[in-house]
Length: 137
Image (cartoon, rainbow, N blue to C red):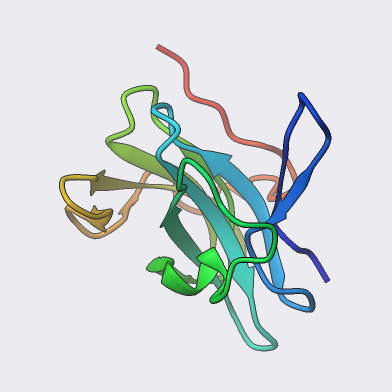
C-alpha cells in the first residue's frame, strides 16, 4: 500500500493525507503549493486526482484530505507533473498498449477543475511510465 504523508522538515512530525491501506502515490505539488496531484489506484484502474493542501492538518484528519480530491482523469495513468505556471498537468496514460504523454489544462479559481479534456501529445511512443516527467521552458 502507498499512503500520502506530509512530513515537516523542521521537526519530523508526520501528517497522513490518505488513509492507511489505500494506494495513493506519485504526488506532485502545484507551483503555488496550494494543491497536490496524485495517482489513486484501485483493483481495476488508476486515476489522476487533485486535492487542496491546507496550511495545517491535525495529526489524523477525519475524513482524510484525499476524500475531498477531484478526479481529473481515469485510466492507467502515471507521473503527474504541474506546468511552471500551475495551469496544466502533464501525465502519462496507457493507450492501445503504449504509454503516451497527455496535458490537461486546469483552473484553480475557487476549486481545482479541468478546463478542457486531456490533450494527447504523443501517439504510440511507448514512454517509460516509471520515469518522472518535467517541464522545460
